[in-house]
Length: 240
Ligand SMILES: Cc1cc2nc3c(=O)[nH]c(=O)nc-3n(C[C@H](O)[C@H](O)[C@H](O)COP(=O)(O)OP(=O)(O)OC[C@H]3O[C@@H](n4cnc5c(N)ncnc54)[C@H](O)[C@@H]3O)c2cc1C
Image (tube, rainbow, N blue to C red; front, side):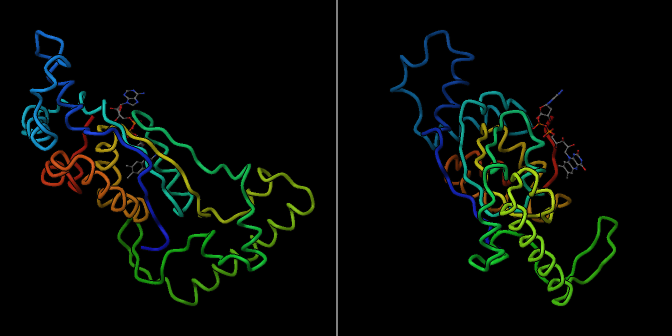
């Protein structure tokens, strides 16, 4: 999958017990921490939360907001970052700004880095536009685009050497330069993001990002992930 990657930085430990505790407090007379010894283990807590909060489209998503996960996302094209950032609730981003960073573009211009480490071009292959019209992206066409990236990187390096600010020079770069970012989600926002961006009409590259994010969810909150996979993943069931 290209150079794309998604790595875990941190996550709420025992997220399903945490969600269980929040749910349990809703209907408990007492102070729930006092009963902590009686809380179910992580897997059982996940099953109980699925049953009482989620299954049958119950839609009690609120308690899922207590658990949070922080991911590092690397080498995705600018367009993916731009799309991801349209999601505002329960999610936060820190993104390579290209005001303070740009050295990698200069290094690619000098041949010290592979151009494809800093610019994203789709692989050669068959594609279709949004109306379903098919076209080929050939080796020859891709070669022309790579050359365009090389010339832009050279011009960018020239501008920086002449004293231009990074924020000025970045304007001449091809749109899909690669950008790293850190993103954190509440568990609810993570699932909402998957609803909207893993579905089949979302752009291919952001769907690939979802594919790399998803194993972190499975590892972190397996019972909730299993419910989501069965009932919502790729089904374009959009929660409000
Ligand atoms: C396939 C796809 C294509 C898209 N194409 C474009 C495009 O071409 N151009 C473009 O500009 N955008 C585009 N978008 C972005 C889209 O319009 C939304 O801005 C984006 O999906 C964020 O919406 P959200 O529901 O995830 O909001 P979030 O910010 O993640 O909020 C989560 C939920 O909170 C609630 N909420 C948030 N803010 C408000 C509010 N102000 N008032 C009431 N309720 C609120 C809503 O229930 C919302 O669904 C696209 C999105 C998708 C999935």
